[in-house]
Length: 288
Image (cartoon, helix red, strand yellow):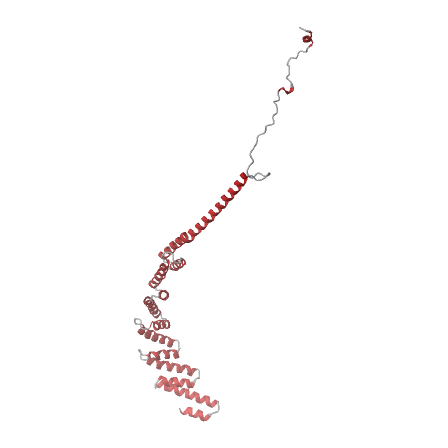
C-alpha cells in the first residue's frame, strides 16, 4: 500500500455531495388559456363572441316568456274563464237560482248562446214565480220580456188574489189597468162595490158616495148612496156644520128620519142666530 493510501482517512458511511440529490432546475412553466370575462388586458375576439352570444340568449328567453304569458292570458280570458262562468251559469239555472244565472249569462256577452240563455233564465223565473203564487213579480218579468199575454194573465191573477184577500182598492187598480182582458170589467165593478162597503165601515162616507155613484145601478148602489148621505149628514150635524148637514139629509131622500134631522139642523141654526142677536133670521129658521 502506498503512502497516500495509508494517510487517507476511512469513513464508515461515505455521504454524497450536497447537490447530488437536487434535480436540475428548469425554466418551463404551464401556460393556461385566458378565461372568458377575465379582467386585465385588452378584449379578445373570443371574449366578445361569448358576451354577444349571452345577450342574444337572454333577450330571446325574455321574449319567449313574454309571448307565452300573453298567450296564456288570452287563453284564460277568452277560453278558460268564460267556459267556467258558462258552466256555473248553467248550474245555477238548473237549480232555480235564476238571478245568479241571469247575471252570469249577461256578463258573458256573446259567448256561445249566453244571450238566449239569459232570456231563458228570466222566463223560467217568471213561470216559476207564477206557479208559486207570486203573480205581481211574475207579471213584472213577463213585461220585461215583452210577453204581453203572459203578463196580462199573471197580472190578472194578482188582481184576483188581492180581491180574495180583501185588498179591494189594489184589485180595482189592477182590473182597471187590464181593461177588457178576460172578465176584468165585471170584476172591477165587483171589487169597487166591496171597497165601497169597506169605506162605509170606516165612516168614510164621502168617498163611498163617489164609488157608488160611479157604479150607478150596480147591485144596490143607489140605496147605499142614500144611506151614505144620511150618515154623512149625521157626521156634519155632530160637527155643528148645520147647513152642510141639511144638504146631505135632503139628498138622502124624503124619509121621516131625514126630515126630522133637517128640522133639528134648522133649530140649531136658529139658536146660533139668537146668540148673534139676529132674531128675525132666527125666527125664519124656527118656522122651518
